[in-house]
View 1 (tube, helix red, strand yellow):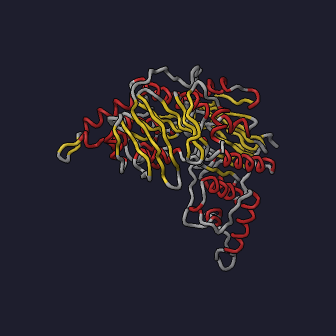
View 2: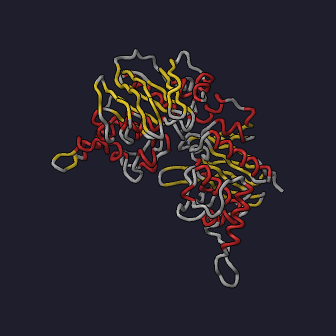
View 3: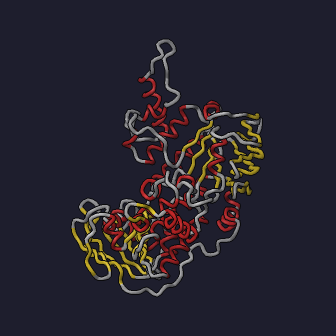
Length: 496
């Protein structure tokens, strides 16, 4: 028998005019957690679709337990014991957990052909118990958090006797505590003989779980290394093809006059007595543990939520913001944490997404000036270095990093003074992160005031001029970057 449960040899997948995978190699051992890393657009998604039978390669061979296989559809992959769990959970929110687990392979009575509900609920509960779930199989799927929905997806994979599970960015939307729970589940599956392919942008995921890491770049296989035998620096070079000598390109900017001041801002049930100020050319980091209400403070400044108490001043004058359009008209922009649900219209072209907040600039008497709109969109795409074939590409066709750049370009289309960036590099690769940091630094040099909400300590420490730390809706510290450290920030973030 082969030493490997899964082998891919010389896999090539071609779309019109594009090689999505180019002679890719991969080998997975039994009972192993194997990490796959690479920039957005490196070919990881196509790789998953090949293994799960969604796509058929033009060239190459796939072996399972040493035997060559030919999958024609996802059903074939399921029968062979291959399952995938995605970052954005695909589920039926109005159905029960048990119905989601057994969707497509329900328990059917041989004679009556009716669904055996009792048996399904019992088997689903057994799977959930094995995974340490604190909810039962009759719970509505839509009532669960993302972390709990992922547990259901794992249970679904186990219900079909999966021996290979692909986890695609499973920790991207999870808290640190939720990620740790997922790690424990992954380790338990590994100890029970399940082989796991763990795709992630986060180095901590790889170091915490994997024994080997494979890197893809530009649709090609770059190499496989033992996790304990490769440094962060070498891994970054493998992923992006160059050294990122300065991941945080923070330029020293002499801060100007005060742009924004928040005094005693409160929202019942979320935050209380929040005060800070922001100057021209300043990047103000807003951080804290999950539940600190950082996002809610920013949404209140932008008019998504309404304050109960406090005042907001822009360039020394008190302002009233009842809705986001008020904020935009005053010169305040907001990049939401969830770019796909709140930042983009995925089925629209890049041009329409970029000009959406400022559409009146390109219209007259009800008619849209398409040429002017396209000209501005093209200029802004080039400004933030979006990788796309044209400005008419659908937003859904872009990688996560490029989608984030489009949301930034959308802000630049407006006449803004203050830009609020909520988790600006969440779910993007190291190369895209560096590019976004460069854009932020350039904007600060041009006099924009930037509020950056982030849970990543290196990002906060590397890009902020000043740092506001919050805990459970209250400001616990205001720090200068020179006095800040990860230990100091965590102390204030966890302070009683």
